[in-house]
Amino acid sequence: VQLQASGGGLVRPGGSLRLSCAASGFSLDYYTIGWFRQAPGKEREGVSCILRSDFSTYYAESVKGRFTISRDKAKNTVYLQMNRLKPEDTAVYYCAARDYSGDYPLLRAYEYDYWGQGTQVTVSS
Image (cartoon, rainbow, N blue to C red):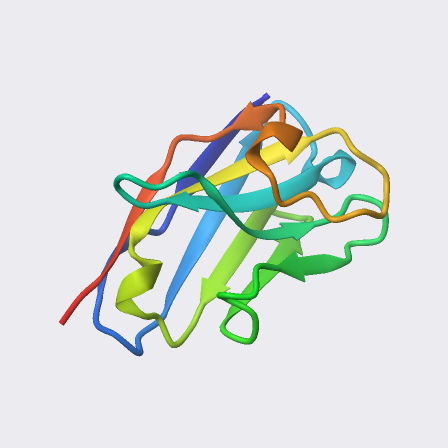
């Protein structure tokens, strides 16, 4: 099980980025996928998740209305579209997977088994 996160970069406040989480060796359809972020000196924070069971999506309050998580079955990739970015969104972003078929949102790092490497997002003018 391998996950590859990409799409980070430097963006001005108010700008947008789309992060990708590509899977190899397994189908993302069988996993619940989460996006997390970690800023320097802070704990890893759950940002969003999309459930395997019914593709329901969940978001942290801090990003609700600005971020959108989605799946592309054909590309075996999960995306995190980030709009109206703020300086406080600056962090290393990670995607994670868990073989979980329940309907409860998973937004805690310990709930996930597989992790990709991080991609840096910097929001600055």
